[in-house]
Image (cartoon, rainbow, N blue to C red):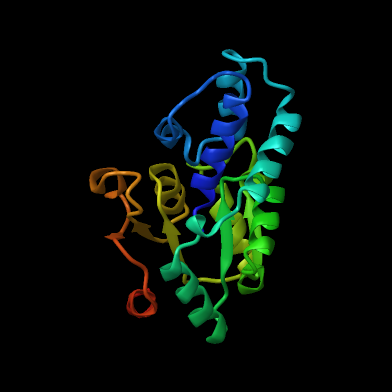
Amino acid sequence: MDTERAYAYAWQEVLSKRNLNLPIETFDDYVGIDDKLVHKKYAEEVNLPSFSETMDEIAALIINNFSDHTMYQDSLSCLNYFHDLEWSQACVSASPQKALEDKLNKANILKYFTFVIGGDVVRPRNKPFPDIYNLAIEKLNTTKNIIVEDSPPGIESGKASNNFVVAIDRGIFSKKELSNADVVVNELSPSLFIDISKTL
C-alpha cells in the first residue's frame, strides 16, 4: 500500500483548492518528512487552516480517494503469506495515525498487522529519526526484524534503528537514493524475506 503516495495526492488536492497547483512529483521531496514542516512551508504560500484542521482534511481525502492504484500486489501476497505463518507484522508510516488506520480498514488489510503506528505518534521525531521503528520493535517484542522502506528518510530511519532494511524500488527514487538500504529490490516475495531471516 503506497500510503506516502496517497498522502502526496491529498496534499496536492488541499493546495489546489487554494489555487496552488503543483505536479505530484513536487511532493516526493516530502516523503517521510514531519507533517508540521510541510504544513509550515505551504502555510507561507497559501492560506491554510491550523495544522490539526489541515491534517483532518488530509486524512479525509486519503480515505475518500482510496483506490486500487495505491495497493501493491507483491506486498499483499507477502502480508497474507506471513500472516498464515504467524510472523509478527507491523505497519509503520509517516502518514497520520488516523488516516493510516482508516485506510488499512478500508483496504481490508488491518487484520494482517499486530499493530500500526503513524508518524504523528512520535512527533516531532518522525522519520528519518529511528523512534518510530524503535517503538514498533518494542511493541512487537521481537529481536530479528526486517524493515521494508521505499524512501530515503524511511531507509535512514530503519538503519538508525539497527535493523535490516529492504528498499523496494517503486519508481519514485533512484537506485542511488535507495542505496543505503541493506538490499534494493524491484519486487517483494516471501522467499526474499525467508532468505534474509536465515541470516539474522
